[in-house]
Image (tube, rainbow, N blue to C red; front, side, top):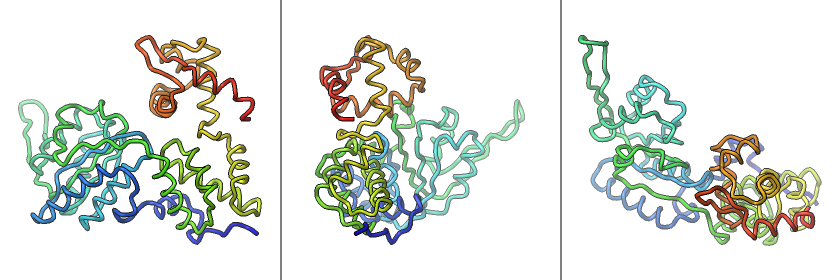
Length: 331
């Protein structure tokens, strides 16, 4: 008996869009954030205007983009999406803002990548719905004020400290931290995603995928799709044993750690005797960039207590050492 094929097809973007919650009740977790954002939106709707600007920050994959979509859906407003890295010049920002429809939700992902010059250009747009454009140079230069349609900016970032204080202060709708998810919330997300994908996922499969999901919904959905693909290719129904078999092939262990995580831990142990190791020396030994190490590898390893950050550098904990000692039994 083979696992049922998904009625949604196999396109990655189509699947990701289908799995994204379209109403608030489908958005699992982050209860306090949801409650605060909905209050701000409902109050603005009663006044007949747009809510103030929102900033969401937290690790990758915890629902920042989904919240932006829900804000637009709730307001019945068009959503314009861009990213901080895509806005390199003042002209790029001017083109985006002047082409917005009235009542648009503008979503800027990784907003910390905006340059300080672009940030300063945003200030009047966020505060007074106008854009100050400087024409010409030298003594003949003049400033032209362009009126903008009303809009709500939703910013998302994994590095909120990199935003300047003046820009953070413009998010009057609130600055909200999204955290890692609980196992219970992850199980609910996996069950919902399995239903959308047309999968019969036993509880043992849900449990195993949740345990390997690094407390992150994006990882949970991605792993569910990969296990589904494995089951379809093998012509077998989803089961706990099949899930373990698939994850072993993917290199994902029972804690959700990948070969890159294990390489990090192994380098810290063998290359630096367990630490403390300066992060730049560790980055060089791993042949990775600093952002990847600090914002991809380390957050989850810190969360599960395998490493510590100290003023002298990274330290492998006792739990991390015990994990490496038992690695041969896991793989």
